[in-house]
Image (cartoon, protein in one colour):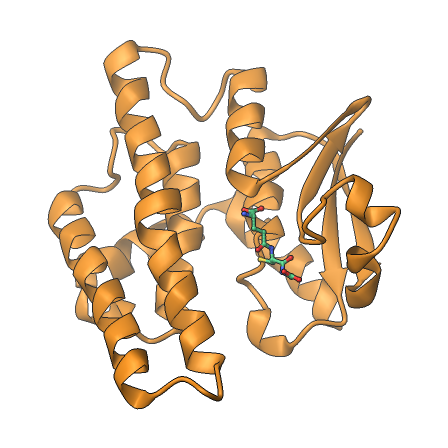
Length: 207
Ligand SMILES: N[C@@H](CCC(=O)N[C@@H](CS)C(=O)NCC(=O)O)C(=O)O
């Protein structure tokens, strides 16, 4: 059985943004059965949880004897194992991988920094503004890359799935609105039945 860890008892503000959602969505898109394994927040910071995810974060993913963490790695593992959601052709696959790591390595770190700066009581207004400007710079480039196209690649892949979940953080932070093509991109992908089901189930964690 495919299993992944989820957190309970965490702030309402994290609803729809926790990284387990990307794994849940991928499993839905792949049409695979799965179970969530619930952990109340402090339990993830001690054994036996740490033997599955040493940073005490969610998600970990397990299937039979296999247990892994890092949401990006989990998505690639699932796409490669099931030979879906990644193009087979070399150039298209290389492009999808580029989009995948663009989301994970180039855009997400700045969104995380912005989020952490925003909630940091000791952060100055100048550092908050700087963090936001850095995100906007990345989104501007991304918006130019997408242009009027439906996807960054030709079809919906695990890279588009990941990019959508990353851009949802920008949406939540109120930074996405100035890039209408990115807003439409997120909305389009959020309209997929797999996403709707994943989000509904994810939101049940918040009672
Ligand atoms: N690089 C990890 C990051 C995982 C992560 O930051 N998880 C967050 C939820 S989105 C978490 O568990 N936060 C609680 C904590 O760090 O204590 C991944 O992509 O899986």
